[in-house]
Image (cartoon, rainbow, N blue to C red; front, side):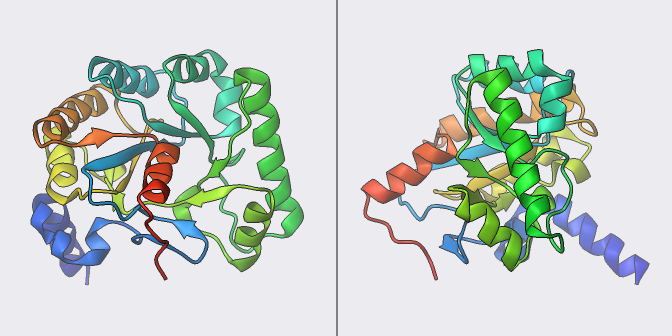
Amino acid sequence: MALVSTVLLYLWLQLPEAGLLPWVRGHGHGTHGGIVYSVPVETKVVAITFDDGPDPEVTPAVLEALREHSVRCTFFLTGVMTVKYADVARLVAADGHEIASHGYSHRALRGVDAETVHRELRRTEVVLERVLGVRPTLFRFPYLVHDELSLRVVRSQGYTVIACSLDSRDWLTPDARRLASRVCGLIRPGDIVLMHDAAGQKGEKMREALDIILEWLHENGYRCLTVSELIRMGAEAGERPGP
C-alpha cells in the first residue's frame, strides 16, 4: 500500500497533465453547496490566493514577486498570525491586496458547536479591523473542511465561502520549478488557485515559483484578479452558479 501511495504521489507531482483526473486539480468547480470553487468564465482570468499568513519570511517574498509583476491577489489571513506579525499584515494591505478571513486559530471547524465558529469569526474580524481597518467578506475554512452547521453559521454572518478549483500543493512540493509546472500545467480560466504564505514554506521557493507562474500567465494571455473581482466578472457576464 505504501508503495502504491508513493507512486501516485510521484505521478501527482511530476505530471501536470494528470489534471485529466479531477481530484488532482483541486476541490471542486463552479459554485455548489454554498461554496465558491471557481467562476465559470471564458475570459482568461484567474485568482491566486494565499492562506495561513502573514509570515515574516514567506509573505514579504511573495509580495515582492506580486509587486514585480503588478498583480493583486487575495490573502486569507489568520487572526493569530496577524496579531503576531501585524507589520507584515500591513504590508499586504498597503500593496492593495484583498484581505479575507481564514479564522483566528486555524482550527478545523468541522464537528464543533456554533459558538466556536462564531468566536473564530468574530475574533478574526476584531483583529483585522484593528490592525488593517478591514472587515473581511470572504472566508475560507481551515484545511478546507466544514460541516453543515459550520457552513450555515459562516454564511449567516454575511460571508462568501471560498474554496479552490486548483490546489498548488505547495506544502508538498519542495522544488519551485516543479510547483510552477504543476500550476501552469493545470490552470484554466476562472480558477481560484490555492497557495500558502506561511511557515513550512520557504520564501525563496515561493518567490521563484511565482516568478515562473506569473510570467507564464502573462505570456499566455491570462490576467490575475482578486477573488471578489473574479466573482463580479462572472456576475457581469451572466454566469450562473453550478449545481
